[in-house]
Image (cartoon, rainbow, N blue to C red):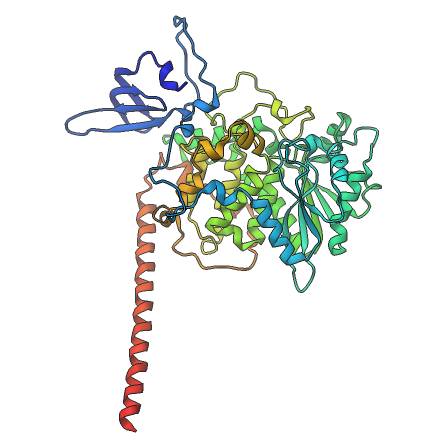
Length: 551
């Protein structure tokens, strides 16, 4: 059944849309199967606005309405009916985004084999998602660890999220390289229960390069201790003697209520164009959004420095191994790995670290910051001890925080990213509401088994990787930088992402015009370079002719 079958009234006249500081629109509202279309139909200035229904946060239902229909089913959403106008087959140059990254673990495994000889193996112990519902069906593990050890270790980790490789860095200065790992909290509890299988698994990573390791716990010691009293906890030092545990307090970011309130305060300040300068600065400071960017990038830099300069392996985890864990491991890779700063590399990073690593996009992005939840509580996504994170149905702008961190890096290193910041804004918009199926679902189990997204929807990457679309989001100042980028984390270095947060309050034409000017200058530069090459070739030919005539 499609949503249009549930619509009893499809057209309403004399509807007024108020758009903040912009001019209001009055016209006819049409409701289709997946969109709301508001058309002014005026002779002098006809305007039409098309809104995807998925982007609507809240609807007030008239109490006099007796009949109410259930429209919450995922499979009646627009992505299941939308098809890209151009067919995808072997005869076209368009890539199928789903197939491009369907075997991303296998491709990364092949890369590791080339770099590290025979230290790794690819296991399908999670083929039917019995080991861990939120992990991929293929897992890369040390070769000397058998599946039975993985199964026992999964019983000791929250929701079965065992320590797995996120990224292999190096080798640096002729060494053997270092390993970045991610996991969830160990279930040691107040009795300090241990798991020899988990200890063996973690130590096997150290044996690969004969290095020690750091455990970066994204919770403060107080929060981690509280989790321990509830059955969770952290690695006990006597059982993991080769690992040094460090607590980084990202508790407020872990708390969905705190983070969504921070974004709400920021958006409300950005939309208030009548407040004074002092009040604006005060509201910006009180939102704490820039502060959260700072502490996340600070933690990521510490992890990156540990891998690159201290030459040690690093394990990152919170309680569930989601949200802040994925934030830190992803940003660490962007800092260290130049491949992630390219268009395809950044897509692969989002696929491997966010989508296929179990970040619950459907839950976190069910509503935006304007949606007021009925039952607000202070339970943490990454700090609670429920039996499964899926019961904690809280929206949270964690992915937006990640994109804003990338924007901060982009501002400090404008020539090191192949894509521009408009690309980040596009990803933000499609992660909340889209005609593509990439961000639907909470994990690979839901996407591949329950929803069968690969055969029923179109991938966002399929659209973005078309040549004429991709060119719109390329950074004209890009110059390949094969070295790590070390950002400044001084408070003065962080700036508000005006292209996103102020795009409806401040005219963005000057920024658009400046980007167009830069692009035209760059194109002129390439044209002059080609002319120089042609003139040099002509000069060389004339010299040869002159020498032949002289002889």
